[in-house]
Length: 169
Image (cartoon, rainbow, N blue to C red):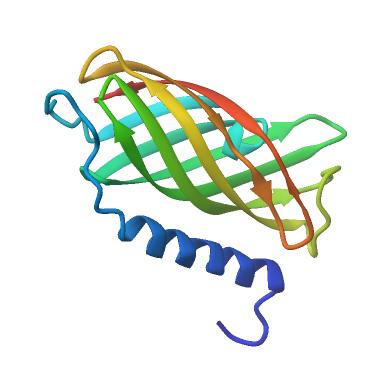
């Protein structure tokens, strides 16, 4: 990165690089009573969580041990307005029906007014992680997820959480 890159963007780059190293090195196979076919795509809505208030998400299984997630969200209230996007790398441990989901990544917000973080030119970089439980009754179809999703910036961190409902296909 060049000298003109702002500290939040450098921090976001460090978070993404750390996530790549951590999750790229995951080689422990999931504990499973039986091998089920992997549904490689997920579309879902998350309330709160990594998108802060809400987000629409797409997740893709890259391999049995690695997935990538992108999400977008926003908040159109008069006193607080933002739009943002984020990306995460993750893994799942456990069976297809009951799994522990671990992920880390970062995002950018363009905000008119946000009460939590300060930024230059209304652009906020943040890091996020997710530790959650996913219930999926079938190999493909409806799933539910609940997660602890801490959010952090260069100045502060706060504990957050979210719930998701979506479709695996």
